[in-house]
Image 1 (tube, rainbow, N blue to C red):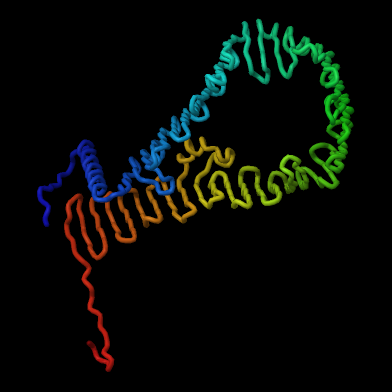
Image 2 (cartoon, rainbow, N blue to C red):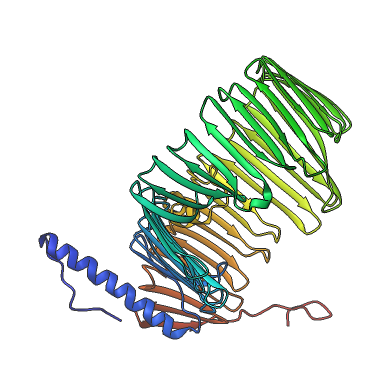
Length: 525
């Protein structure tokens, strides 16, 4: 077979070069389309680094990407989960089964989350809005441009708003159940834990009384000179020249009342039925007697020296040279004992942390905090491991045996298991990734599929230099292709074929070779 009509001319400039590239890309796309028509499962299209389209066997999703990792689009094979991103500017993820939708804009600058009818939006944590609940049980809405404007709707339908510092009345802000003000800080009123407090101005002069008159709660503060707050039968709190002189009696209505006397920095004492603590010339000396956990502790020139001994704690700190701490905690809710053993040498050069209880063990080794971390967990339902070697690599294995490895890893060590960092930023610097599932299927990718090696139950796939070379093998067939299938060699059973574009150049069968056998008496038959 001969090909005619092709001529070569020198020159042509940029336009002719671009036209030639466009023709080649078009031919590759046409060949990829022809290959799809021949197979039930569409093969991947790798036009590195411009475009990549494939079914990811580990993610069980159709994944498309463009310009390396910058453009991302995927859809799960069951159609429930969809993603689209223009990294790092924007990312969207929707899950039909969970009825969720998540949007990130230059994460964490702006985010939007929706689950069913509940939603939440924030912009640099200054502009915040959210709504949750149902019309039947009561729906609550918040909308703030902190600290200047606040508005919302309570579960009972009451609306509220506030403009700082002029006037406002809002609910559930800054740890206060109610908060209203006029020309803040000249006048302000807050409600928290059954106590109503008036400030004029905040926080210098204030009066407190119980929302319920039966609580017999009252207080007065003129910060920092003098102040008190008393709730009969519950607590008594006094201060003078705050924070120098403090006296408190709390928990009077329970089984563990506590009394505190403080004359900083000279003397501080805390007394309760279960433990006592005395500090003299803080931070020079502190003594703790914990009768509930049955141990004593001495702190000298905190945090440089600590020594503890007893049934539930043994500790020796010579900071930063040597630090060791053993603790035994009894969880009365889950009826189990938890043992902790922390150890460090030349802190933070080397740190080891261990936690054990029946059926579970956690251990973590660290060098210079985030420079290197190795965390392991073992239990009845399997084991996990995570290694961070900042900024070079990250390795993770879950309980089911799935493995993930990447290099580089610039932020993952500081924000472990942060799914938003992993989908918005990690692909940008993941020069090489390795993924494997419990079934033994694996995918290697270098430079966003410039080189890719894939082994699954369906077969083997190798891609070299993007669309340049590809080899795919199954139990019944094999294929070698060049330039995205422009030139293709197929093996299926005993048949061999050679293709150029969509045209078949040649087909032949493997000819069985004669086999020589010996007769019983010897000789060739």
